Length: 182
Image (cartoon, rainbow, N blue to C red; front, side, top):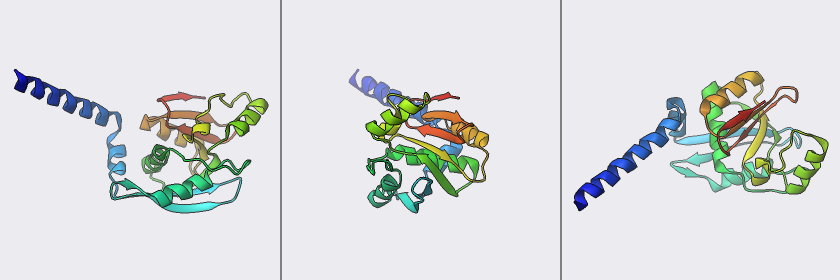
């Protein structure tokens, strides 16, 4: 009887693993298995440009993540915050999906609660509990890629939130629940 319970548990755990794996498309799985993950980020507000590896040999790289945290800081208050490494994975997957490994232009990365409140007072499009304040969001452009294509590819990944702001010329990505809005 005990053996059957253990076998059933292993079976259920294995099926759960398959379920999780099926949530990420095959190209996404393939790109996440890359031995090195590297991004080039350009903060349009500060002019800073960085290219760094953030993942090698199965591990996130502290130095690369720190470099990205700095360039994605709240430039208005000069506050650096840890950015969710899954966001960089999303960016890596997005570029892989699009077949474009160039610069990612940052419109907005981390926002302090004070900056978010100030922006919220000036715009109806800023969420009160924005994922930007948690270091889990980016507003971006990919030079040379039409915004509609960036949105389409981000939606196809089926990871996190995808907001489409064609009038403001950016796409929002976050590591929150899967959802989308225009």
